[in-house]
Image 1 (cartoon, rainbow, N blue to C red):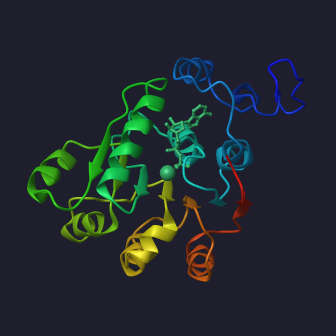
Image 2: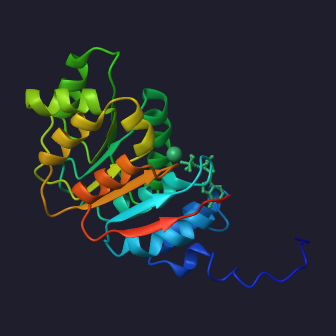
Length: 221
Ligand code: ADP
Ligand code: MG
């Protein structure tokens, strides 16, 4: 496509078509997010409307913002309880996701995002949790350790995200995910993201998502 070619989708791909606050639109612009990626355009309207969602798109397609914007939108800032939980397969991914959520949260205010992964002492994490957090991003094993030990309480959880769900299943986290989901309030939004859609992903979705919108972009960019 050349620079001058008219793009019939340009309005549909504008973040301004979404119910986002002007401060968030300005923040997205500052971050260089000029237009939605295909997965963002397909997922954000339903996710911002509070629907459960299963979204399949390849790595690098912008899935993080597709769940970060909806979960941030719902945060009740004065309530210093964990309202969003994002499960990721690895510490590296959890740290990336935390970083992106923090950038998108700049538009909203003072949102505390905590990363909880294994391979690091649990006690300092427990002490930090005592001070409260709005968003927790972590790996399933460590998140479950905190739930079982009582240092993480999900009674006020509004959004559960399963990021890279196929990789989490490949790594053997199925039972940990199920145990975590069983400790989340039933009245919540669940967003599931995966690069592939094998049978066990469909099974996971049918167990933990309610009447989900399904978005599949086989060759998303
Ligand atoms: P995925 O989770 O699908 O692998 P990411 O959410 O990590 O993809 O996004 C990949 C990269 O694209 C990141 O560097 C992110 O900041 C950037 N990005 C995401 N959405 C947009 C957008 N709408 N415009 C420009 N860059 C974007
Ligand atoms: Mg991702």
